[in-house]
Amino acid sequence: MKKLVILGAGTAGTMMANHLQHKLDSSSWEINIIDHRQEHYYQPGFLFLPFRIYEPEDIIKTIREFIPEGVNLINDKADKIDTEGKKVLMQNGDVIHYDILIIATGCNIAPEEVDGMNGKEWGKSVFDFYTFSGALSLRNKLDEWEGGKLVIHITEMPIKCPVAPLEFAFLADSYFKHKNMRDKVEITYVTPLSGAFTKPRATATLGNLLEEKNISQINDFGIKKVDNESKKIIDYEGREVSFDLLVTIPTNKGDALIERSGLGDELNYVPTNKTTLQSLNNPDIFVLGDATNIPASKAGSVTHFEAEILTENIVRFINNEPLKEEFDGHANCFIETGDGKALLIDFNYTHEPVEGAFPFPGVGPLRLMKESRINHMGKLAFRWIYWNMLLKGNHIPFVSTAMQTEGKHF
Amino acid sequence: MQKVISGKTINVNDEGYLTDLTQWDKSLAQAIAQEEGIGELTPKHWDIIHYLQEQFKQEIPLSIRKISKSGVVNIEEFYALFPQGPLKKASKIAGIPKPVSCI
Ligand SMILES: Cc1cc2nc3c(=O)[nH]c(=O)nc-3n(C[C@H](O)[C@H](O)[C@H](O)COP(=O)(O)OP(=O)(O)OC[C@H]3O[C@@H](n4cnc5c(N)ncnc54)[C@H](O)[C@@H]3O)c2cc1C
Image 1 (cartoon, chains in turn blue, yellow):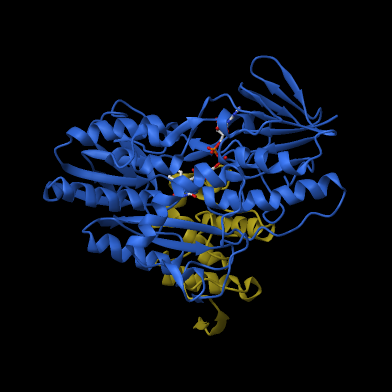
Image 2: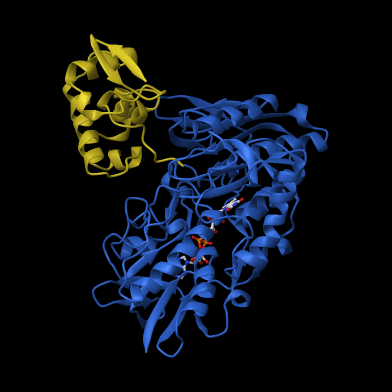
């Protein structure tokens, strides 16, 4: 019996377990999936939790209910990967051998990377919303906050879901308006980028939206430290921004296990072939989701497209066939813009987001790069699609794995 | 798009980054540095420029964090040498594409 091991049962690992359970011959392959957690969080919901748009029960389910029968779920933390011996060393001392390993350990926040970030104000006036606990304590803070200077801040790129901080800014504007206290809140958006987003045309559209919503923008801000006494963030050029409430996206890093195993770059991301998803250093290791170093967005939608291609490549690898070099970096993201609207962007390694109709060229019904109510409905529907289709490895109808160029205004 | 700078015609993209590193030379780098408000390039600037070009040729993605861990320059110095977006400015002067550390 040969063994395939999936490390991590989040978005990516769960999708792979479901895909492979159908594809691999169960008489010759045993599939194992490892995760120390019990809960599967719908992370896009972390954006809505602070504003009470979603409640905790909307975004938490168990890992187990999404792991198909025939796949062995191992509920413990992996400590190290031994690539020579082809085995995973578990924290409890167990050793799990593999013939093929899929790394899907995602990434997480590392506030300790910035001087003073997780100092005495952490959880009092300094918050994150990239973790369940962070989003929840921020919700409790917002419930009672009476206004002042709200600073929304990105520490450094890359981060997962790079549009989430902008969405947070738009939703905050809308939230305070509804609470009749927008005039008591000054919102500032501070980013290490030179504009609102990473791609030129989307940056122009999103920058205009910030301005329209009276959110000021500070660009090219390379943070050096958080001063807990004076409540300021300070950058390497000495620029200072005062806050009463700081909502920051700390540095994102891959799991420490990657570092312990000597498999990562300086942020613990695994060097991966960007078209085949095979590890660059170990042919029997494949990587997908937020754990890779490929130049694509760290997003659930990207992971979904990756999983379809990786499934084929695992089958080809087993049959000694050449791998398909097909992943094009396709990302498809809804961006909440507040007041019940959203916009949609669709892009890949080579094409930046532009205007057009989606998924049917010329028809829609969704509009790319334009705010609309139907896009907002799309964003909310994404939660249902995530739980009921994406995790189970179902193909989303009409949305192709490779990005379409038809119907777009390049 | 084409641009004429210090008597040479070069190919650049719409943000002013060279699209062909073979058109790059030291006098061109100095001229771009003037335009970017950096002034006279010092030996330390050149060390960084050469490091960036080496990394680019080996297709290694660049980030401020990586450079500050490279031993070539520390992060404070990097900001002092190329103020306001050091990696973007240094890349432009080095004739390589704008870093895509951010997607
Ligand atoms: C605030 C926010 C908003 C977002 N919004 C969107 C959105 O609108 N659209 C979108 O497409 N995406 C969005 N995302 C991104 C999306 O959630 C991620 O890209 C996706 O979950 C990545 O999947 P993954 O499997 O790589 O990582 P994860 O889902 O994080 O899973 C990693 C798993 O590995 C496990 N693990 C890690 N280390 C170990 C170890 N040593 N041993 C055992 N198990 C381990 C973890 O417990 C975890 O279960 C958002 C993310 C955030 C934080």
